[in-house]
Length: 431
Image (cartoon, rainbow, N blue to C red; front, side, top):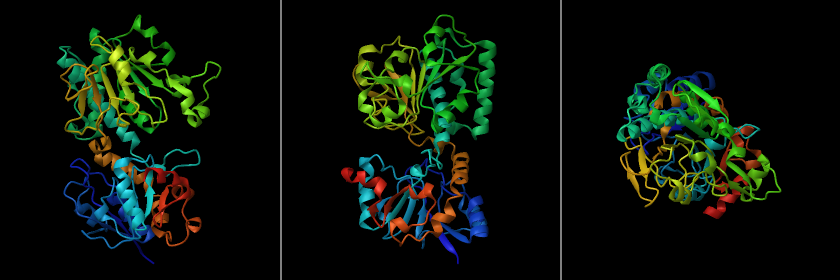
């Protein structure tokens, strides 16, 4: 018995040329699992229609399939009754802009599986682009630092760095950064940038990707407790790296309590941010944390208004998480690869596109993996391929408790027959 899956054309914006399943894996699905693939044509996709046809896929505008794979949110006019959709729905936080899509899926009796919730027994994500968001975000943030310093009249080696999209591929970007790193070792950084301290809020996949790039440069890792110490006699031939975990970012409101990670997750209202004590020692802050409104912010508008000035060390925030008015409260909007940064004026609250204004520069591109479409798609497809046969061959007509899926995938089923599954009933309050 043969099965068929459909791959929707990505069209959210001109940069979205990633794919959930590569031609290589289309061929494996056909030859090993008897699964046919029908894919919509696309002029911008990183793998061409011809490559998919050569792998055995049928390229067709209208897809006669019961299950569809995509990456970004699916327009409501694409949805069909009773079908199964697998994509990043961005609904699990009750995101307002995606509630109409979710409502439509419920009305049509659709099944929804969200990649974000495919996790192991410890809650670790198994299918993700996070590493590549970190990689592209770090390159773009270093580029932003170079442009900002040059605008301030400071000659600096980072001005030689390009945006991620301007490199042929990741290897070219890494090789260029190795050259920059050698120059730092031999020539040293400008005194105006010494010490150059890059802080990472978070230590998950996004942070790992960002650190992968920074580690190409000559780095010296320090712990948060020692961040003030290096200011006394810093080296201008290294970049200082510091990773902040939850215990560094917050403390219990009550002096009688000690920090406990699980307690913080369970009762974030009993904790307050202490991140302000590090801000003036950082040159760059990379925001890589998962944030929800129940958690304290890393940096608030009020703090910036009271404490930030043109002599403050912090120059750039690489807000890879891009939660609007979230952990970085003044991330007022998402940006795009062709307009990746803005300046937040800490006094007026205004934001100005680019790097040439008074305030702090924020990089807030929300689809960073698109800047490395081939590498990120290949890695994503590698992580997804093991789950595809069981998803495609599952009988979604049965009751949810009888639905035979791997446990990692079943916990990612948000809708079944148009109804929220037990783990996601809380989303009702956002509808």
